[in-house]
Image 1: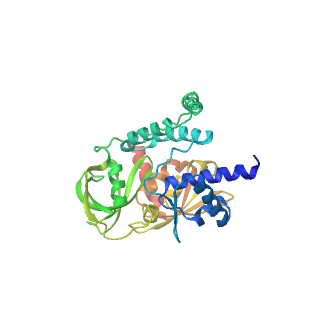
Image 2 (image 1 turned 135 degrees about the vertical axis):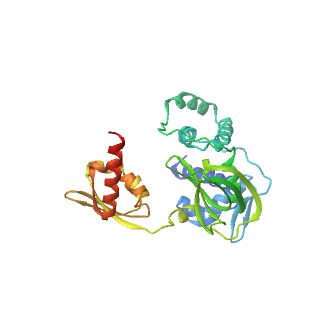
Image 3 (image 1 turned 90 degrees about the vertical axis):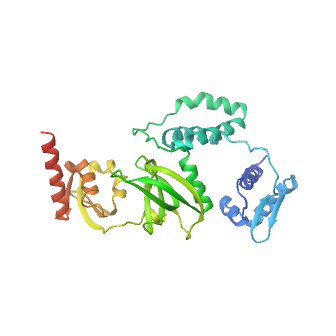
Length: 317
């Protein structure tokens, strides 16, 4: 069998997988995905139809499988099986506890359709992969909280929550959840708060009670990262000069604290930030590598940093 037919077999199998996993598949999207012409996709779909697969073509929309038709599971490649093992290790360490049991049962279903040789592959290699997490996972007061949140997003219905703030006050909120995200070892939801008439982040482990409602969203929302970029305070520009040898240690955190510009100089790397945490969060982050950094501006940041250093010295004398 030559390369042409092997490529076609792989492509037709992949198209079948797309049809099984999506309610509607457009020929244009398939052509772009596999870098072929739309006419080639038409021929591939015809090949599947000739093999007895009941494909429904909707003019101007795309293809779908006939409603109610079930196909046996598609076999996984060895590379896909190995990726499952790695993903499972990551999920065990970093997934939210309310998702853990659901992921475990999903993986059991995946394992059940593997070939005998692939099951042996998993057994031989799964103990040779590990993921180290240096942070203890937080324990939530609620079970199944993320699935409830995700259901509300899918159904576009409001949630009622009781939320404990950082100063231990408990407030009741009605929210419209845009999405969930994981950051600095905590799971958060980004939501529109009807009490504040604005977007807010809520740490999931601080939700004390949660309940779904039948009330639909008041508006349409974009993607979760569109709203994470928005801030709720006045930004201040800060500039610091950092020793080059420490840069690899702050490569991720510098973006979180509002990095806008980075330029290399003879004396080090000059970093420019726009931050709304100039009075607390930013100087506390800066103090973790202050022996390798110099504050260029503003003067208030230098003053705040010195105050923190004095307090630390007094506390530990």
